[in-house]
Every structure is written in structure tokens, then in C-alpha cells.
Length: 616
Image 1 (spheres, helix red, strand yellow):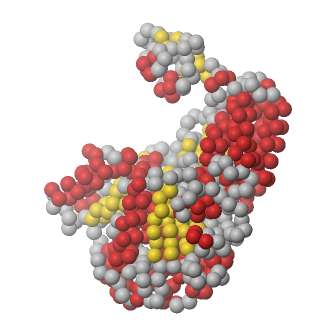
Image 2 (cartoon, helix red, strand yellow):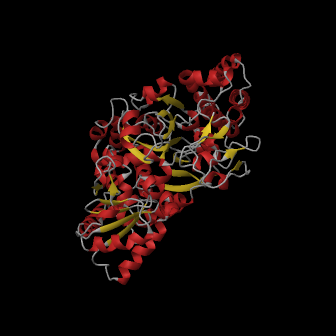
Image 3 (cartoon, helix red, strand yellow):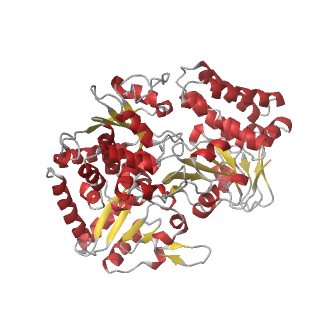
């Protein structure tokens, strides 16, 4: 791999690669992120390679292995370019058919996505409802890039934003573009990125400055950053290099979760390739500008989402937050000025520099510009990564993109922002999804988790689940956080068991507000959100548990009873699946359930095809 010694040399290489790319040969794209590989993508890759070699198709089609495309519900999937033909849930037997059809310029009709409303097959990816309503500025680049081949990134405008910034020769111009774009940090409270960079740029540089990428997303159900790291690691690297040029930083750190082995692997390869080609290290692209990035692997502590705790962990110390000021831009990693942004923030930087701040600012709303990626999971029909303009409504995301409820039950609420977020009821789904409106509603954007809940979800149980998570993840430094989260969990446990009194609700609310107001870091300050939001919008469920000793959703084990009704056909599935042999009955006759043996695991209810298992 030849090192590029000038911006002109880079532009010449990029021009050659783009010319080769426009050959008109169909390209079969197989997403092989973590979700794709778990669903069988590696088998599809082996079959595709075998068929191409066996049938001598190497000159007729290309094969590209990429990261996640976003529609995780339909993995393993295949995309054929340039037509944009999308094949969902492809099995090993059908992969060979797709390869041969692509080589002949044909489409395998019976493997296309089926539109259940019209009954017709949909060929184009951008015509499928899940993709149709999105604005995929970031996730769509995953489809174009092989994460372990830097040339595929370069031929898709990769590193052209860096070349543009270096060619301008004015770091103040770069800083002003980021400020003018209105980009807000995508990892938490949405602090203006340009303003943070400006603070860092004004710090003395005699000891050197750091830039850090927080790639340690810890919210249950959130995996946006992981998917971008797996699928397009060079976009993070390019964003950080541009950030270093704008702020005067000389050293960079990517703090990656050790539980993301594929993301770490691809990032290591990308960093090595970037160094070999002259994008990292000394005298980048022949200029006097120098910058390099190292990886630090975190152990997965949720509290390290807080900047000062993350800095401690990078330094090899226990991940505990400290008082601010001094802020990280004043005293950060190794006591040097440091600016920290998350993965999604960094990948927006090349787009802003390439397209211009004005173009970026037109997307979204006035104070919330650009797009945002959400991991739409839970009880929605279509789950996966969703990218929409800031200011889109919950209704559009859940119903237009997510397809509504995956069950016969109605959608009840959406939980945003992970354990630190809140639950938004269905009646408020016209609310726009942006930092300010979510804060007013009692939730936060967080890194972008969005969990859809239906009427079979107990909101007391949801609050209890998150408080159990948070009490374990609290570093314990603040007494109110350490004991407050523990006590809130204890009260929620009492409510879920029907053992609480009405006075306990007032105590729970008072305790939540005390924790919110008196803790030091973001974990403690936002920990009460699941409690406060569910009390605000679903207080009647709390009262039902307390006053009537009943769980309306049929979730809390101490307050429910399982039984089998006359819809039972005697198929025997529930009897065979019961771990405690609590179900008896002859074949083709109504079965019975022994409540004294039943552990209320819910397996019988899940497996029954006839709605014969009731929960009261």
C-alpha cells in the first residue's frame, strides 16, 4: 500500500478508483455486521464466492462484503447494485439463484420483499416502507464500503473532506463550518459540537491536546455506534482527523467496548491502513499537520458514558466521575485539554465539510440539525437501525417505518434514551424527536435507543428493570446515587408484588427528585427518568398494582395466574414445553394447568397458536 505524499496524489488516486467503480458491472452486496453474521451471512458469502468461481462469473459481477445496512429484522439480506434490488431473509439455497440472476441482469421475483397491503413484490430497496420514510445519510454509506478495504472508502468520497480542509489551509474555517452547521453531540444531552471544539482550540497547546471518540454505548437495545464502527470505521477516523486539524489536537483515542470484537477488529485494520497511506501520523498528505489515533478497550461500565469517568478509564484508573470544573477541555486525558464526542457525531463531520454547513443545517429543525440514527427495537414489526431528520415524530417512526405493533396488542409507549431516558405514551406520539422536546417530556435522546412497548408491557416492571440496571452500574461515589437507586428499586419491587401502600408512590417520587437534584454526574441525574416518566404518564398502573393487587399487563408474577381456556385444541405444544410439567391433558382434548406447579415463566403462552393460555 503506497503512502500518499501530497493532496494532489490523493486526488489522482481517488479519480482512478472512481473511474474503475463506474464499470457498470452488477455488484452483489452482502451485509455481514454482527446481526448479519448471527443470522447466517457468512454462509451466503461462502456460497456466493463458490458460485462465482465455479461458473466463472468474476468478470460479470462483483461481490462486496459490508457492515449492517439497518434492516436487522430481515437479515441475512442481499442487495444488488446498481438497480438497488433488495432480497430479505435469504437462505443458503437461494443465494446461488441470486448470483446467477445478477450475472444475467435478472431479478429473482419470488425472493423479493412482499408488501402485505398491496400483495405485490417490491424490488427496489428505497420503495420498501422501512427504507422509504428514512433519510439515510450515514447508514447508507455502510452499503457502499467494505470496512477492511480502504480503497472502497476512498472511491466513495472517503477522505475528500480531509483533503478539502487541508487544501483550505485554515483551521478556523473548519471550526466555523462545524459551528454554523448546528451539529449537536449525538451521545447524550446534545451539547453543540462546534462550541466544544472552539473551547478546545483556545486552550494552550504546549502540553498537547487530545480528541476522544466515545464508542462505549451501554444502553440496553442500542447498537448504532457499533454498527457504524463495524461497517464504516474510516468515517470515524476521517472525522477525528478533521477535528484535530480544527482544534490543534495531536493525539486521538477511540474508547471502544471490548464486547464489540468485530467493531474493534475492523477499527484496528482501518487505523493501520490509514497510517500506511499517510492519512495518520506525521505530515499528513505532505502537510505540516500531524495526528494519530490509538484504541483503548473498555470493560463495559455504563458510568463510563460520563466524560470524566471515561477519561479515568482511558488513563487505566477506575472509571469514576469527578467534579466539574475543571471541564475535560481544560483538564482531560493525562491532564491535557480533551474534547470527547461519540461515534455518530464524528461521522457527521466529513459530510458537513464536503456538502457545506448550510446544506447540513437545512436538514432537521432550527436548533436540531441533521439526521439521527435510532435503534428501533421491541414490539415493532420492523426492527433495526432507523435514520431520520431531527424533528421527525414518534408516530412516523413507529408506524410508518416500524410498521406498528408486532402483535395484536396496540402500541402503548416508546422508551427513549436507554436506562437514563423515559417512557413516552402513545397519545403523545405526535411529539417531535429532538433534544428539547424530549427533555420537556421527561426523557432524553441519549445515544439513540428506542424501545417500542405494547399493551402487554407493564410500566412498573419497565421502571423496575432499568432501576435494577442502574443500581448495579452506579459507581457508588455519590451516596444519593448509590443508595437512592437501590431504594427506588426496592420500592418498585414492592409495588410489583402488590405489597406497597399508596404512600410509597409519594415516597418514590420524592426520592427520585432528590437523586436527580443531588448527584454529581449524568448517570445519577438522569437515573430517576424511568421512574418519573412512568409515574407521570402511567400512574394508574402503579395504583392498580397497589390498590387492586393486579398487574393490568399480566407481567408481574406475584399478581397473575395462568389458566387454559376452551380454545385449547389439545395440540400438546404447551404441555411439552412446560419446564415444571404443570400442564396435563390428552391429545386433542382441552388441557389443564396446575397453578401450584406453575412458575409463570410464560413459555406456554408464547408457544400457543390458539390464544388458549390466559393470564389474569
